[in-house]
Every structure is written in structure tokens, then in C-alpha cells.
Amino acid sequence: MRLLTGTVLVALAACQLVSCTQRDTVVLQAASVTSWRLPTEGASQPAPRGIAMSANSSEAYVLDTAGRITVLDRDGAVLRQWRMPESIVGRPENLAVLANGNIVVPDTHYHRMVIFTNTGEIVRIFGSKGTADGQFIYPVAVCEHPNGDLFVCEYGSNDRVQRFSADGEYRSQFGAFGTEPGEFQRPSGIEWQDGKLYVSDAANHQLQVFSEDGEHLLSVGKGKMQFPYDLVLAEEGMLIAEWGDGRISRWGFDGSFHGAWGTPGRNHGQLSTPWGLASDGNRVLIADTGNRRIVVVTWPIDG
Image 1 (cartoon, helix red, strand yellow):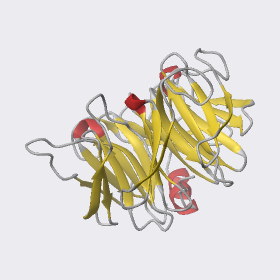
Image 2: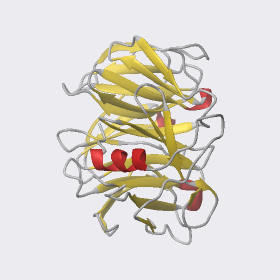
Image 3: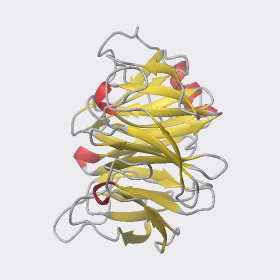
């Protein structure tokens, strides 16, 4: 679980909000907005896709379009870097930091999961191409249960969530391709909190909530968000990266809309196809993929 402090969401809730109708938005005030660039790759500037924080929030792990994982400190300085074992076919787009400090990456176009140490050594690889139990078409997002189990989202007309042991042993699954409650079209982000799973159902333009056994509990935001690609959670609610709307929206656990930050564009305070989210306390780190930068938003402490 990537956790936001109460400070962040209390500050968001304190802002003046508009009523929630389709495409409503409000730019929530921030104490500061800065941006970081990843190291270049030859003459090109790779774009960030996935971001995850270490348990003590001292390091950010960033997955980019060059197939690299770059580790940054709290000021955006590069600490170390490594590459996916293969990337010619395609690059993954999300990752998670496990409770033991290892890094897990759904290696989307190689139909597998790759687990690294936090310095880049490969610990384990599991999965293969297919639609059977324990296989993948395009695995794209992952989160960890407190007991060490992994929940993995995949898409590719076999859209579902599979559950594995920490060693990669298949346990169970739920979901299917479709538009009905409990079905998915490109599930792109997943988080566990308090016995529930929160899945950003990107092409259905909604977030879905399940019990950890796969029972559908709630659908959030359908028709009021555009391609939600990732999310972070706190006790008070959710922040969602809307790839299609160029914004970060805030939602209550009851499904209510609480406002948004950002507008589509290339300028300061704007976003282009935001792909991933992470938080290190009162800051939110955004993979502003279309602008090839990481945007760091600090929320006002006093609302």
C-alpha cells in the first residue's frame, strides 16, 4: 500500500470545491510544485511511467520508457539505476516496493513478473504467456497483501486480477473482460487497504472496489473520470491519476468526488497523460509521462 498522510487529504478537503458533474474540475492549491527529469538515454529523454516509494519514503523507484529503474533521493538526485532483463519487445509501466524491500515489476510484454533486490539483482521471475491459471497476457500492475501475497492486474482480453504467494505460486483469481460490475477493461493500478482491493479500471473510466476474495463492493467515478491509470490511498480517501484528463482527482471511499488538481497541458501546473502516482507524506509524485518529467506537488499544511 502506498500511503498518503492525513495532512495531504485534509488539505485537499479544505479547498473550496465545485459540485461533481461530468468533466467538473477544480485546481486545488498547492504549497509548491516542482519537477524532476530522469537521466537521458543517449540523445533521448525517457519518460517516467511508474513510481513507488521505499517504506521509509527516503527513495523513489521510477520505471521509464527506456526500460530502466532509476532510484532517486527525496530531492530527485540519482542514487542508482538498473535495467529490465529484456526490453526490445516492450517496456513495463508499473512497479511496487515490497515489505521486505524488494522491487516487483509486472514485465508486461514478456508476460511475467520480475522481482529485484533494491539494488537491481534478480531474485525471482515467474509467469509465462497464456490464459491459464498463473499465466499472463499483459500483466500491468501489482500490490502486496500484508501476508506477502501478490495481486496482479492483467489486460489483453483476459482482463482479471490473479493472486499469488510471495514465491509466485498461483492461488486464485477474479474478474473478466467486460463492462459490468466486477469486469475490467485494462485494469491499470491496484492497491490493498484494510481488507479491500482498489482497482483502477482504465478503459471503463472508473475505479472498482473488491473484497480481497474478489467480491465486487463498489464502482466509483464512472463517467466522471477519463482513463484512471493509477492511485494512492489514505484513511480519508483516494487520489487517482487520470491519464485522459491530465489531472489528479480526489475521491472519498464512499464514491464521492472531492476535487482535482492539474489541467491538461505542457506548462507549470499542467499534466500530459499522467501515468503513475506515489506519495512520501505531504508530497505526491506524479509520472507526468507526456511531458517526460516527474511532477512533485507539496500540499499546504494549513489548508
